[in-house]
Length: 274
Image (cartoon, rainbow, N blue to C red):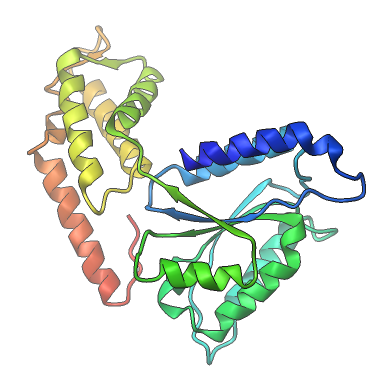
């Protein structure tokens, strides 16, 4: 909803932009996105870029409209190689000439416990010097231990607006799965749909639920199980096909175990992926 509110502001900006002096650019603010994994951020970034380009609210230049970059942590007594990598990425995306103009989304999660690291200040200084050609979006997990301090630090260098991106509701995720299944020429029966919706409601409340990433996995498993069956002529998926995803079934149990294992690895200093 907060992202929709931003687009509404941009729409007003598009309508009113004619009153700006021709030689003055429209400088959009930077954004801090607070979001869990799997909320569809990549898709949102592409949609925002498409809108901004079509509405001519900001210029775009480069091989891509959106750059998504994960800034890995660097110790303060080491070279800040990640900033160098970011600069190289921006240069490559512009074709090594002119400058990249577009959306730059940076994942800062590795840096949340290290906001006092001088390299982080160096990053903010770099971004503040180059923000006229970028729509900058900084992305972090909803960790209450660091957000307030992060916002204060960012405000010293950038015009940051904070946006909280919520996990989609179960009904919205269910519609996503249905639309994906339609591409495989099949649909859920009423009973199967009710079972799956209950499972999605439970999944959404799990701390480790990673949203659309898991939904994609679920779609592939449902399709595979269905088309490995003997009766596929009706193209209707019954409850027997999705019993693996029952609210008290193996999927939920294994999903929680995987998250617990991932958290143990994270606490030991590893960065496991889903």
